[in-house]
Image 1: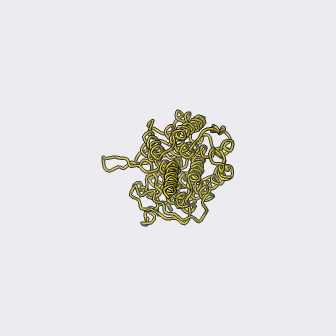
Image 2: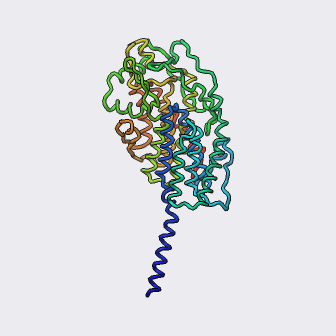
Image 3: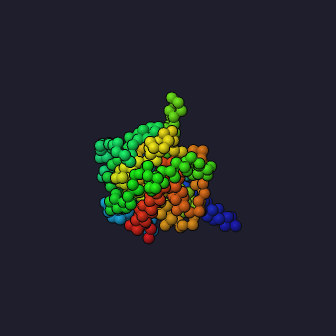
Length: 441
């Protein structure tokens, strides 16, 4: 009997020991941990006032790094090397190395995120916390060391590749010249800031053949005094809408405002307030959708990567058109011809009007998420609650993207046709990402 009890006790101890040995898997493979890691980068981007297109670049490269680690360790996923034509083959793990690929993916994301943002080392403390979390959860030292080493190798490869996308060259490119030609964009109050990123269309694309692949139709002719013209009707629609906003329309405009830096002016007092950029808002939405679908860690990484690539491409396509048409903002027209005291509900951003960037990038990201999670996934977006803005619920992610575009009319910063055309432009970009990037077998 004693022998039986001893054997049972030994078996129980062995079982508990085995469970403890694998405790780190539950901790480090939690998809919510990846959501938290993306949110950490999102917060850094917010605090340092990155313009939306640069924010999208940050998210794209960091997520691609994490995805390439996952693709190396999970046979269900396919590397993007070669699918993105200029992405070289990634370092492959040795057969002898014992790697926790999820942990390595987190570290690769952070290393790239650290390198493409500023100030330098912004994610160092968070990385230390991740490593401590893995160590405290009992990750064996051999696995820990191999995972760190592999995550670094992939991150270094992505960083080397990223430096060839012409971003550095555009930092010293010529500034945009504002002209007084009627119908052209000019800086708007209260900042009267110079045009943001007029050379962004020169950034290397990831899936599009060129920045102009989805060049939209020409905007309506500038005819502010022709009451029968399409342009006049569009301007009046913006003015009348803003002048009679409902509470619901105000909520929609505030919810999708996503102004990374709003200048508030009260008399002689000026101060800035910050929110997520449109790209940051969509990174949050991806996390909400993945959690709603109970996606595992690897699928969650895949979702973020697909969406971030669509956002990256969307900004390049949209900025190509913005600085081609160089179209005037509603605020400028209304102030000049109809009401010099009129102001939009939200602040006009410092770049040309056509097409709506929010409409383009929202539709692009929504297409990739619809392909992954379906067109009937209802969800509640709580992204803006930290800024004091109540959540909104949507029957599908496509409906959310449509609302994001139309919110710019309620905000008074875009004509309706710019949002409609932008939504169509974004859908084509998202569909191209789906078509050209086969990520899951």
